[in-house]
Image (tube, rainbow, N blue to C red; front, top):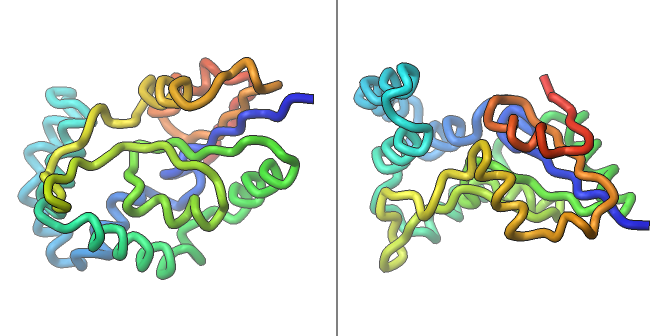
Amino acid sequence: MKPNLVVFDFDGTLTHGDSLLAFIRFVRGDLPFYLGFLQLSPFVLCYYLRLISNRDLKQRVLRHFFKGLKQERLEEMGIAFFQSVRGFFVKEKVEEKLLTYQTRGDVVVVVSASCAEWVKPFTDYWQVRFIGTQLQYRSGAFTGNIRGKNCYGAEKRKRLGQSYDFEKFDKKIVFGDSRGDRALAAWADEFTRVG
């Protein structure tokens, strides 16, 4: 019998809230976090008015808080973030579902618009694959740019298709929580909206 392909969104599905915002506060602290978003508020407003894309806003936020940081440092901070927040940031019941599918022999993957630098410590802990937005580095330092497309909406489905032959699976089961998961919901054999 074929295994299922079980796909989990990360932010808001497996976690209580947005991991990028939590990671920024963890790395930079409260005051720089709030001052930074005060400076970025015109771009946040433009996003909500649909004048700029999700990718454009995310890139501006990442650039503001992390440009120039070494990849190794971001990855170290990602591990420290995981160790600090895992006990209260992860939704236990959804995590239990992920682990149950994994134990049954299904292929479990986390697909997210967030980046490996702070999500991969979670997926490594669960021993599942991660597919997400990628940061661009030059000489080991973050350039302030996203490499390729933001792994959001239809891009999540596209990235899965680049990684897996869907014919090898019995069912495509998806857990998500937001409009960024609509393309996956339409594609899935089973979709569970996590509140």
